[in-house]
Length: 174
Image 1 (cartoon, rainbow, N blue to C red):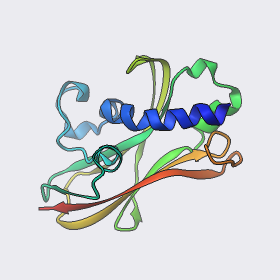
Image 2 (image 1 turned 30 degrees about the vertical axis):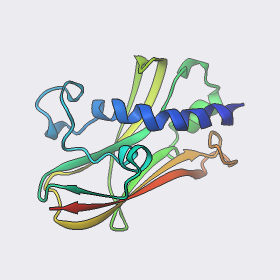
Image 3 (image 1 turned 60 degrees about the vertical axis):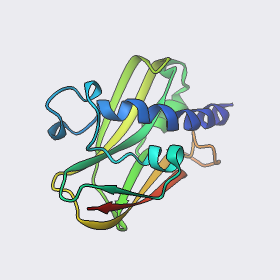
């Protein structure tokens, strides 16, 4: 039953995480006002590119700072079992971003929301990766979403990072 619940959350995640949680955790240096009140032109959104638009390439202004922010959320946090909570919060439930094969450093933002996008008691983990100077030329971004084996849709064990899905996007910085 827990694996079915998390399978549902993965599908839900693709739609909901792109609509707000990441903006709430956006990089401070990119915004002068709260991120949820303005558009996010400085964000490269892999969820939208790969899973909503179905694209594998896009352009972005050269030498312009950008950020990538993705992760996980789960509603009804208080109803989760101790095993589910442990698996969700452990480091094996994460988002990794590689640019041209190099894993990027990220800042983890955890938040609890009483209500978010129609769900209640929501716990989120969002990883923010920033590039303040921007890039030039063509670069391959690979986003990988992992869940701990105790909560993955694929059988695993505690402290085992299981790849749930990934996205490859070539960005042409022009």
